[in-house]
Amino acid sequence: QAETLHDAWAQALACNSQLAAARLEQSAAESDVTGARIERLPSANLQGSYSVRSDERSFLTANPFAPRTTFALPYSQSAAAGASANLAVPIYVGGRIKNGILGAQARYTAAENDAEAAKLELLLAVGEAYFEVLNAQCGVRVADEHLGSVRALEAEVINQYSMQRISRSQLLNAQVGAAGGVRQQIARRNELATMIGQYNRLLCRPLTAPVNLEEVVVPPMQLDLAALQQIA
View (cartoon, rainbow, N blue to C red):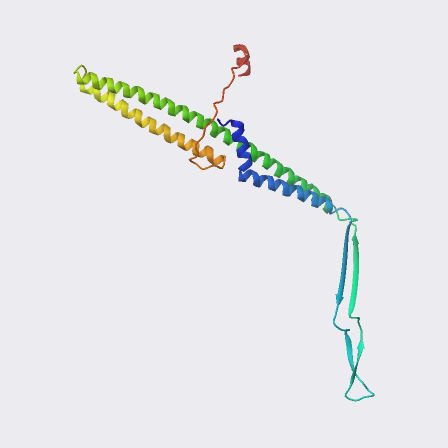
């Protein structure tokens, strides 16, 4: 089945890494906008802790009633728990939060425009490559037909020369024309291979992958000469 221009666009949009990077930048900028808006909301911070020790923490003190002996004075339990809560409400920050939100929105708009520009540039590049491949294929067909014509002429001239009906210079001219047809055919095929490589690169395919493109039929314009002159 022949590949249409819309198929090529869809595949290029799905695999292009530069477009994917631009869209990720847009998503990151959108998250920055959300983060900037959150800063003007109250924030709460809750913390809790719990600890268990093998014994109570104590001070060792010399016993004045029994020389060379000590006794322990505990100052904390072996198990302890704690909790804290903080609540912060922005009251006045001199416009920092508002300007931060505006800056984040501006960066998001720029990232959105960059992503859209990357998409349009990709669509344009794929469209140009698509039509360049079609044009190169037409060039190869024309070169093949031209080579067939000059080779037929060369065969006829060789036949005429064998019967001594034409001069040797005419024979050489025919051979030169056939050699030129071969050179033109090689040039057109190399051009087609280059165009196919560029097209496959945009669609994330191997450069030498075969392509089968559908011809684009442009319908005739339903305008008369006067209307076309007015548009021009």
